[in-house]
Amino acid sequence: MLSIENVNTWMNLFSEQLLEKKTYLSELDTAIGDGDHGNNLARGAAALKEKLADNEYETLTDLLKDIGMVFVSKIGGASGPLYGSAFISMAKASKENEELDLAGLLEAGLDGIQKRGKAVAGEKTMVDEWIPVVDAVKENSLTPEVIEEAVAKTEQMKATKGRASYLGDRSIGHLDPGAMSSSYLFKTMIEAGVYDG
Amino acid sequence: MMGKQIGILLVSHVEEVAKGLTKLLNQVAADVTIIPAGGTEDGEVGTSFDKISAAVEEFEEDTIIAFYDLGSAKMNLEMAVETTDKEITLYDTAFVESAYTAASLLQVDVPLEDIDKQLAELKVK
Image (cartoon, rainbow over all chains, first blue to last red; front, side, top):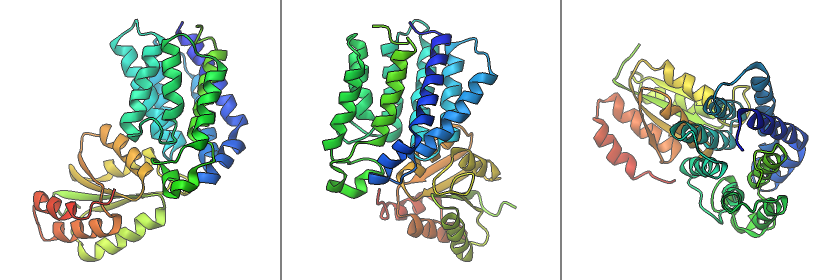
């Protein structure tokens, strides 16, 4: 069940995970990108923890919107607008439909990412993590294994979107950093009890 | 001082690139407002939504044409476009060449639709 409380817990767990994996994410990004994914997300995570500690939220929409704005402002790079658009889209969807379930919410988030980044499945981006996860949430079959398998699949993909696309075939054989950071998002979503399928 | 009706916004991953291009454009377009928004807030390589938004609000002009270097600059620019009342057009064109073309044409009061036509040939992304 979605609640203000468990989304708050989710975001705190996600932030802690990002801070912990900062170096690893930047290493993944050094291989096929500009090497700043870990640092950028860690900056966003620190700002998000602060924001959540300083504020009380009355609606899920307000909470999701604030998460999105912190990501847009503090992460920077490509990940800021992408993660930010995901949460801002979720905020909008939750406002339009108060009964929206987690699958609907995540679908709105994915839609926001795709509108912003124009990526589709198989281009070695965070979208390759989001699509299988959204499908699994819809079918009530999400597990940590589903999340991990989706990241693992990005290794053999050739990047055709994002900074890694400049490398062409040379991007094959590396995990996508955005898919990896998104896997932390979804694992902590399970941990926080937001997904209780 | 607002010299023309349309201003130019330059977004680059590097502060010096955006500032350097501004310098180049100022040479051919002394009366056009050109504002750079390069790098992150702490001067690192990257683009910043906050920095771009602040640059947008700096314009006295209500119409802005914007040029950028790489993909993530575009995403931050798009977010800034969505959160302002100003009319901003983004061009997926060669950064230096198209900004230079637009500046030269604005300086001599060429209408935007004619500028658009010329910029279309410089589309690279």
